[in-house]
Image (cartoon, rainbow, N blue to C red; front, side, top):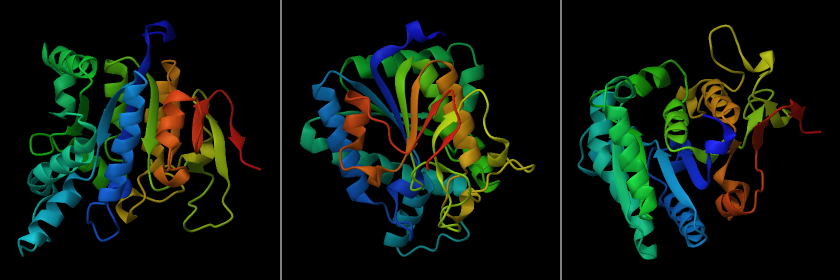
Length: 279
């Protein structure tokens, strides 16, 4: 794929579980509503948006809690299966005021390796986007726990899935949303003076952002901070395909998705050709 094959009005938004849920694991319906509102505005401007969502496990915990069932001994794979209905219905509720339908795409990394399955996912996504329907993509953790395994190792959740989806639909822009508003030289929750990268060179990622065990200075994904290393690699992959990529926080601006998607505004850290730390 080269830049000329990208579709200018097509956007992929990856939303991390830390953005979609509170610290206690309860889904943050305000975040869902904010994203849906902004996507609805983009749709009126002719944009096509696909969402790669996390928070299935947290939705499962919330569901069991509402039923008075203890979730501590339940596998993450099963929690994701239990939470799928709540996660999807929360997205549907968020988009309903704008009369926007959503389409569920629960896929696995194995789908990419099997004849015909990748093509069927692609055709389904393109059909939905063409009809103004918002695809909601997540890994089918009950069938394949690839993302759970990565998350347990401290790697980010669904970042690689988002990169694959963006490549599949030839997205022009990709936005990774996380509670950490970009890429920092150190964990900003532990080092208040840590500077944020305004830009990271997709072809020359700073070695300081990589540690020997594959995690980053931001800490691992199990303490509520999605592993930044995985996010950088996924974002850099998209950037090298010619896509415009930002890693940011939903709290950066109440209309940041609109401005990112329609006005070319940058938030958090953008992927590009230089390594620039904020002064």
